[in-house]
Length: 360
Image (cartoon, rainbow, N blue to C red; front, side, top):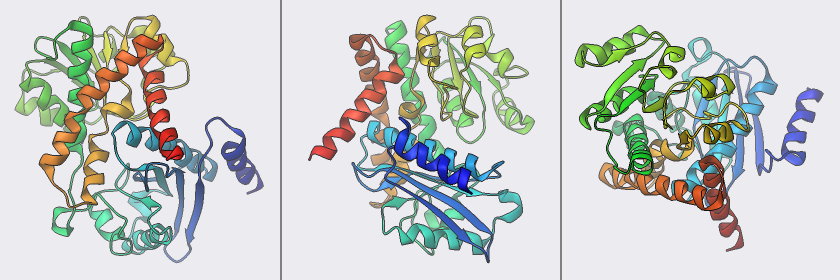
């Protein structure tokens, strides 16, 4: 435990990736709950971010993930124009094995104990039904079902926001905010990806997909036989004539090898943390590949769950998610003016908004 404590303290107090306001370790022996709640910033308002339920290899890995994800949420919420800071929670364990009503309610009590400094929602391993249970113990819970006063599945607006980011990217590269006639490769056609494919097809794009789950691919090809399928992501990024690559599955999709092999001129997708390590954004720029920062274009979901706190209105949320188009264009313009990659430009804009909030 000493190594874990030392690692957390080093990250929090002595690292550029630190600066978190609060980290809470939570345990309920009766239910088997072990969780970490990380609050990166409340400069813009209560921290908002999902709950990830995952069988981490170690407690150290779980804490590191919570810290990284919480920091990312600060930037995402700032760029989305929300009055929320960034936070994230992780529950350690295999949700297929240990998830229970008792555990989720115990977790809800820990969220409630923070008195509104952290607002939770769904993430990997947690779903709308889970948030309904958490909400029985904590009113600072979003992503609930419509039957329980919530907005339901946030994937719909996540996909819509990514589509707006793609339109902005097309405007920047080709001078026209349409995907008509463009070949778009979508890696991962699950919760968000299959909605994105619908937007692309409606706009006249040629779509190529891949997914590790055969049933996800079949759901699309049964409905749209004209959609092409390739074996895996390696094949997708090498597809001849690809205009846009959309990573919509796991993070780390953009690394030294994939960037070198990319045929697309634009990367714009729904996956979180697409850049495998610092420097990848420069590699993309050096190859004249336009990167639409992931936390900017995939913010439709967080826009939706934030609205739930004020009485959910889908049209209001969709209108705000539509602003991702203009936000993405503004990032590209800032990147050009400052002579930096779009990812760095987005960070600067988000940091400026948080800094100005601190001065108020």
